[in-house]
Amino acid sequence: MAGSAPLLAQRASAPRPNILLIVADSLPAHALGCYGNQEIRTPGIDLLARGGARFLFHAAASPDSARGWASLLSGLTPRQHGAAGGQAGSGFSKAQIISHLLAKSGYNCGFAGHWPFGGEGGQRYGFQDWHPAAAASGFQAAAISQEAIGFLAKQKPQQPFFLLVSYPDPGESYDGRPQKFYDLYASAPFTSAGWQPVAPNAARGRERMADPVASLRLCAAAISALDEQVQRLVAAVDQSGMRDQTLIVFTSTCGHLMGRHGLWGPGEASDPVNMFEESVMTPMIWNWPLHVPVESVRPELIDGCDLLPALCDAAGARPPESPALPGRSYLLSALNKPYPAKQPWRSLVFSHLGNTEMVRDLRYKVVLRDEGKGPNELYDLRRDPGETDNEYDGGEYVTVSDALGRELSQWRKIYR
Image (cartoon, rainbow, N blue to C red):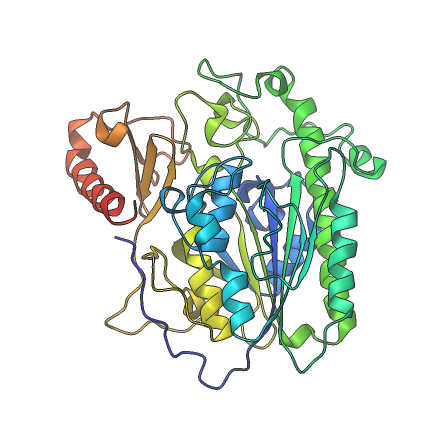
């Protein structure tokens, strides 16, 4: 079962890095070239991955944008932080999120971009520089990048900085990008995208599935436009002269099916909520020159609740002791160093949305609804990576379903 671990003293002689955390909205791992996509062009993100570590299996804490975002910053499960679309939730509002912790540890903290929660009464969550994007439709990423670059230009070598750049891209709206990105995909066939005819249980995004290739062209344009902004940020760090002292982390709030399984969107694209790999698995890239080995591919199972402990570990800050955090630092993995013999890395990740919960190891995935009342699912991901054969009621897998069900029940009890 997942569980927090004490701060490991693995940074002994390493200086505290500057940290640039880039968070995209609803960007699945399968949409990026560095994760195997052959049709969507993401050269900036791919280069960032080649220059550092790419985690193969990073599960969003929830296949929902706002909930997954809140877990990344707070280290809490969706039940613990209570966030939902437009509402931070009492747990998140009271939590010591990563910016609070790093500010207390001497970091100059800046924020630029999409803040998914309204009605916060001016709360700035420990950020000294605070530049939330206006709640408006259209392409905001370029303006967000400009605010972030302005923050970088003001930083001094004697004080480390933490900069969170939160893009609402690719998101669910694909209008307003520069025309050059639409032109890139004007005739793209998307023959390898894996889309299927609209599913009978599709709950959202049916209009996108009316012409999935046209929708994929628009979505791909939005992803490539985001990639250009990532390139701008990295170039700004390079030009600042602080590149070797800066850890850049790139990730996403949750995944997106993009037509796979006949669905458009993440978890709530279907009824009941789905936990397909495309909804849950998101990119996690760490790039820190001279510390994170280049072209690393990490096989560990990690999830969104692990990011806060990992960043605290890198920065020499201490995670909060209450409420109990489900995550653990994976800094040693990023640095390609072994874990202590008595603290091996775990073999499970969890995700949660509404009445639906997922537990996954390297081979099997179990999805329970209404605490096991169903409908439930079990997939043998080694034999069936496309998750087409639900084996939950098959006698061959009863031992697996029972064992993973017990793990999920214990996780639920501890991290409510």
